[in-house]
Image (cartoon, rainbow, N blue to C red):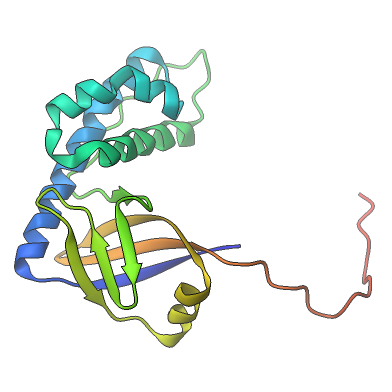
Length: 180
């Protein structure tokens, strides 16, 4: 079972500026990938990676290798949501300047109450506060992907945590069978 936890970050003014620069570069990388996806009608992450990775890295060099891969993945997911049929024209997608930044387990780490994030100006280490309920999830779960979002001047890290499935309640008795 997966759960998403939203963590409010306690960051300094310098860290805020670094995250703004990272957000700008990540959105720019996403917008650079879009024409390749449209031209080739491709939203398979591996195929699109082979089509545009080096060209995007040349244009947006400050986000690094893994974040370029994350931008390609972000674009692919956006096109897959549209469920475009073969006879349809492919719409142009534009990522907004305040869009989220996709992080994977290579671009962030959590240890205790500390979060380390990739940014264009180097790793950012910040503290965060969460309630005991969410701390239980963090302590027993496995970290997966995450999205860094900004609401006004406040940054939130929405992290997906994979947990073990809870055992069914009520014992081993069969209550009902659905026969269709």
